[in-house]
Structures are given as structure tokens and as C-alpha cells.
Image 1 (cartoon, rainbow, N blue to C red):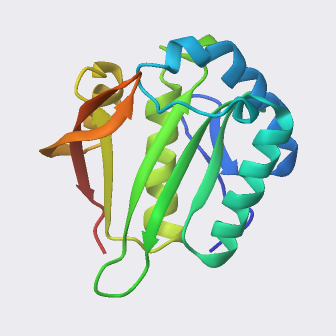
Image 2: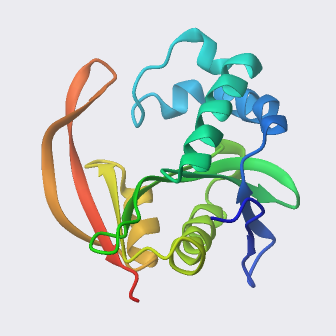
Length: 184
């Protein structure tokens, strides 16, 4: 696994790289500002999650997972500024599995500009070329049509519904399951 992965899209200046401790403050600022906008798509978080200290602790855990080979936690950058995250998690690198799950978010101030699609495309390249993965899965809320468009544009196809799979905004919600085979 590379600790210095940086991938660049040719169509924009959207890039991704491995998350760093210094990313805690900008991530916290986005999460505070966007808490209400993301409430319907993400599980409730403790108050510390929205602080630089809380994000620093979360990043420390993600980097520990990266060192263990179970996660590739990235940030999404536009013109060098952190605008979101892309995370390859649940990495199963065994030769007979070689799969992971993908999650991502883009700050509201940077949405609807193609950054999510570019970031997912760049993450797919990291999964295939650097991590040697064969398959990737993702999940979206059934009502999250923008995220579903991002996945479709990056070659994912839906393969099922996970009923009452995630507690969001006080209710159990169904998730639409997505997959993409990366190839050998």
C-alpha cells in the first residue's frame, strides 16, 4: 500500500490523496457547516465528531487501519483545498477475495461540480492499481439519487436492497447496494 498516493483527473483539478492529521481542521469545518444537509444521508454522530480534535482522533484511527491494510482513507482536494473524503474500507486483500467497500462525501460548497464523480474514478484507480483489488461495493440511501448517479457514471450497477440497514435521522432506512468489478 502506498502512503503517498496522489491521483489526478485529467478533466479538472480534483485530486485525492491519503488523509493526513493536518486535514482534521478543514474536515471539521465542512462537517459543522454541512451537518444539517448530511443528516438525512448519514448516521448521527457524537458532538466531538464536529470538532478538529474529534476529527484528529478519527483520522488517527483511519491511519492505523491504513497501516494494518484494512482501509485507504483519502481526502478529496480541489485546487489543493480539502473539499471531501473518499474512503476504501473493509479491504479484503486475500487472493480469493480482493474486495473492499467505497464511501465518499463532498462538502456542500463544492457539490454539483463533478468532484464526487472524479474522486470516485480516482479511488477506483487506486483500488485497481495500488491496492490490487478485484471488486468494490458501495451502498446508498434509496432516495440519494445524486450519489446513485455518481456510482452509475463510474460503472457501478445496483444488485440488491438491504432492508432496514442503517439508522438515519431516527428511522431505519433501506440501502441500495452497488457493485463494480475492477478486473485483474
